[in-house]
View 1 (cartoon, rainbow, N blue to C red):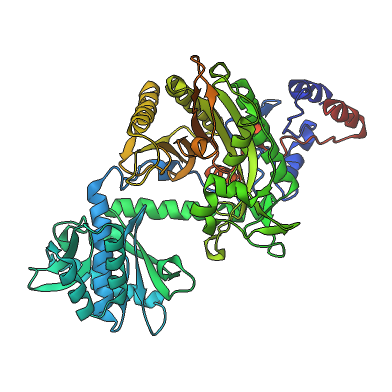
View 2 (spheres, rainbow, N blue to C red; view 1 turned 90 degrees about the horizontal axis):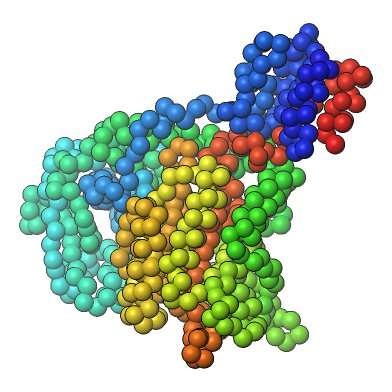
Length: 595
């Protein structure tokens, strides 16, 4: 037994990352019982969890730090579910199902008014004003039965183009004030926008139900597979997201192309519930949200802090190796800084109130980028100095309504893994490729190797010249092609200050999460007057890249916990090994092994 102790301890003495209980063979089963008890959960990954001692196989002496072991996701992952982005028919099914649901609701319940009913990632929802109170679970069953009847009728879904005046008159005639407000907002935003109504019925004249909508939809209600549709839940939602407006009732549903897809989706939902980071975070004693301190503020417990420290140390090492310098900047700044950056004008609703400091207004920071701009301005920059790469794990604070807070996924205080690159136009493509390389290297270390990538281009309202937008967009495309990555294009979906690449990671049960982003910025260099001296002694404006890989340390941590079901890989586990001396004589060897 002593020889086995020494042999095993020698393997990991340098990192002290043992996860074995080394005992005499006669006491092996007692040790197993202890290890599997509530007092000891350690974090070896499954790949390294089988060891042999004295020829006796022990399949799981080591386990996750989780005491709530979940079943394997292999069967669930056998079928990959389609998405709206890659399947236009699925999107049409979901949008049309929302209309069918609204029609069913208004047939069953008098006085109910409709508002909006879009498709979403895994289904659809519709918001209703129901004067006599919200819908119940029993109501959902009745609504689904009526939907099935409408689907069975195979009513055509017909588009009608109308004038603004005609749309306004028709909406007023059926007493739908919310739809009237939607119409007004469309006209205010885009005065020349086409106004379309979508009908359910044999013809426009014989319409059974209609809605103000831009489409798209299926040809008939019969194209909706009734057995692949389920109504899921009821929730409250303020009209226009404004808590000062009417409280509405939202019905969520899901729709797929086949019943088998619905079955797989439900299994994924069950698995997701088992993996809920809020539940696992509490069971594993990783973090908490202390309501006495306020909602959306994270308290990291010792084990969670250990995991976070390992994550951040790895992140810092990778960035330093990648040519970045690390910055630390303040948590507050004079309000004038946020006026210069434009955040006060464009992002005021997402910021906390200002504080008075000796007669001046200060603002707790919602972003890190203005601080990096100030550091850039600190000295005269030459073209020879570029590219400059600065990275920071900077904690920011944003006002989120209490109803939108969700564990680590949406909080009021969080740490962004921000980086900003200041470069020459001819350096842009190479810098983007290097960012993508670093992103891939870091994400893959945490087990995320499948991505969905979106390239977002110039919106109608933007800053910067046509020339710079064209060059920046071309650089993003070229970088993606260098990587050989497939991507979709969101025409007009870029920020007003520049085009961007957004990267969603895919977790162990097939869900996607928005984490990484690369954004060109033509706004802040102009607002802050950032310059460099070019080779001809002229003053030029650098191109600025915003970049994040985790996005938010807190959110990424939550995604990681859910993806691994709390079974963190060995290198991240807060407690990687424990030694159990079974005699006083063996204790010294355990103590030496941990030195």
